[in-house]
Length: 111
Image (cartoon, rainbow, N blue to C red; front, side):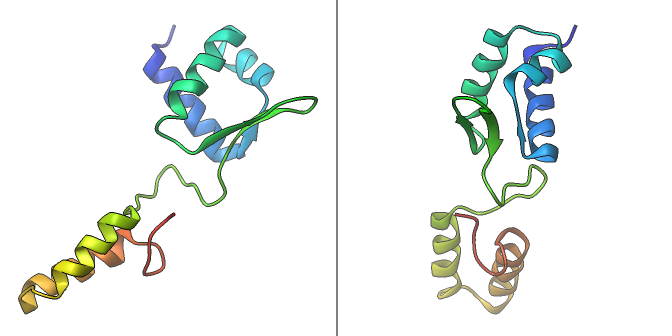
């Protein structure tokens, strides 16, 4: 039996790979109740870009562009680093640019 944390991590991994899934399939695959899956999705949606589509053919899905294994700066974080570059030393500017390049998306941020 897996813990709630392990199960929720598995749900995020499944959705990251498949992009969407029906609740019934997650129930069968993870061996828990529908209520448990729905509660897990509610909790996970506070930290991940998960959405639900109701009705016939409804599912849980992740936003386009989401990748569990990539890290991004928020728009505000990106702005602050850009502001700091204006007063930074040459060495600090190189470090800030490396951070922006590593964590920004195509020179920008994931919005």
